[in-house]
Length: 347
Image (cartoon, rainbow, N blue to C red):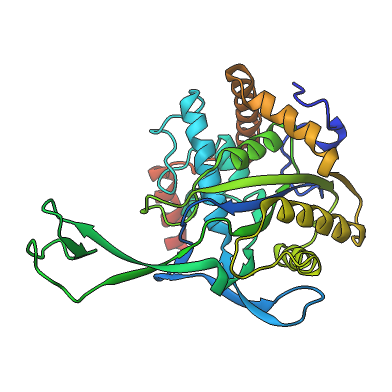
C-alpha cells in the first residue's frame, strides 16, 4: 500500500530488513517550550558547557535535552494510538514491563527483555541543546501549596498545621517558555509505513520532561526531512550554526525570548549550509520543498480512515518481521534436560 505522492517510493524499503541497509530518514525538528518543562537529573536541570557557535568560539552553558527525554514521550504517543485503534492491547504489551515484541512500537523503537529477547531501536535520537545560554533560558520558582483556609505551606510539608509559619521553602529551576532545542530524529532503513508512524508520533507529542509535573508543554516544529545513505550533522553543530546566524543578524537579546520566525529561518539556512558540506548522497525536503510533504502527512494522519490504514500497515510489517526474526524463548523440556545431565555425569 502506497500512502505518499510527494516522496519517491525508492526512498523506502518494501519490508523491515534484518540487517542494516544504509538507508536513513532524518526528521529536522525544532522543539519549542510552551510552558515550564523540567529536563533534569537528580533534581537539577541538565546542562553542558560547550562552544557558542561554529564561528563564535566563546564557551557558554546550554540546557540539554537527553535522548530518552525525547524518544520516550514520542513512542508513548504511538502506543496510545495503537491501543486506541485496537492494534494493541494493554494486556499483551506493557511498556518497560512486558513487551509483545511484534508491534510497530517494539520493532521500530526497540526493546530489551533480559534473556527473552531484544531488538535494537531503529530510531536514533541524540542530546539536544538550547540555542540560548542556560542563564537566559531558565528561572527558579518557589513551590508551595495553600490550605483551605488560605494559608500557605511549602511543598512537601503537608503535615504542617494550618497557619503555622515555616522557614523551609522548596525551590525548583524550570525551563522558560520559548526556549528552542534543534533536534534531528533519525529513522534507519524506513518502510513508508514506519516513516509515517515516526513522523506522526513527532507531530502529535506535546509534553516532554518530568512526567510527575502538570507542565512540560513542548511543540515540535518540523522544518524538513532528509533522505540519505548515511548519518548527517549533529544536534550540537546545527545549534551552533543557528546561533551564529542569529548573532550575525543581531537577533540575540538576553532580555527577550527569541522570535520563532527568526529561529525557523536561521534553522533552515543553517541546515542547508551544513548539508552542502556533507559527502553523502542525500535528497532534501527543506523549506518550501518540505511544505507539500508536511501537508500530505497531516491530511493522511488527520482522518480516522487514514491513521487506521497507516497503523494497520505498520503493524503488518512489524508482525512479519517478528515472525521471521524474533523467536520467543522456548520452554525447557525437563526430560531432555535430565538426559543432558546424565550424559554430563558419565563423561
